[in-house]
Amino acid sequence: MRSAFILTLSCPDKPGIVHAVSGALLRHEANIEEAAQHQDARTAMFFMRVQFSCASAVQEALATELRTLAGEWSMTIGLHPHQEPVPTVILVSQHGHCLNDLLFRWKSGLLPIAPKAIVSNHRDFYRLAASHDVPFHHIPVTAATKPEAEARQLEIIEREGAELVVLARYMQVLSDPMCRRLSGRAINIHHSFLPSFKGARPYYQAHDRGVKLIGATAHYVTADLDEGPIIEQDVARVDHAMSPEDLTAIGRDTESQVLARAVKWHTERRVLLNGHSTIVFN
Image 1: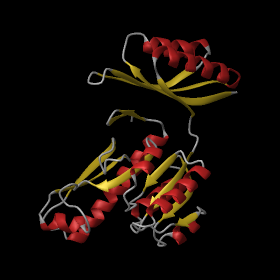
Image 2 (image 1 turned 90 degrees about the vertical axis):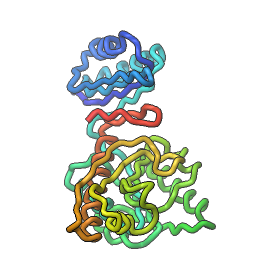
Image 3 (image 1 turned 180 degrees about the vertical axis):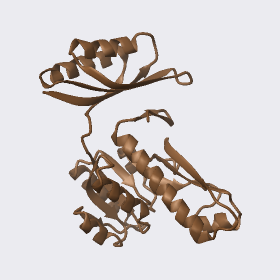
Image 4 (image 1 turned 90 degrees about the horizontal axis):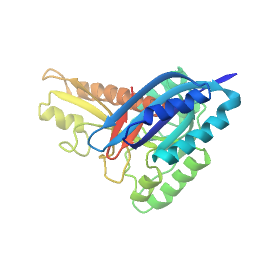
């Protein structure tokens, strides 16, 4: 019996890396089904993603050799079963377009996530969660209760074994300690008007200024607000004939699509961190 895996790695760039990795796979009669690599001249780093299959009997021995290889080449590696749903917790506030889109894609078999919980500072979407048989947790947040609220959120995330946290228009700024706890496994989505149009009703502000492009950015959460490593972006053209409501609708569609792509690529292990940026093998 054969099983499929995804190997990801990053390390200082030098000759022989591909040979070493492919040689290890060959010695265990693994079949490479997909491979991508990138040498970053700016950081002098090498990145690689390999999808392969191998006999179940050699999995442990192959994993051991890959770990040895990682030590020899100063590699950061990840070895994951292919197409195994990623345990996920979704945070949301009062705009449900991204949440609804993620749940639809999951139910349709288009997104390899396993939603373990939906957490919100409002009650708006408890019925939506119930209709998908996903536990819903209402955790109100105020300035005074934020540390307690985040502690409860982290308790849920860890209890559910969540490997991914998605901020699907969760309109609360996470504290620095929480950002550090979720480093590399929390994805946020926001409109791309920042920093020009901050605060409430950004699409109305953009309409007043006559913008011609609206867009969205999905990125990993860091302590630097809305400045984490970018995973995906997209834009849509608009014009003077469109109302603020039209811009809002187009913007929400764009946000949903950008977030879904970012989540999909993350769960397919196609995104590797490269300092303050990302390598995306899509």
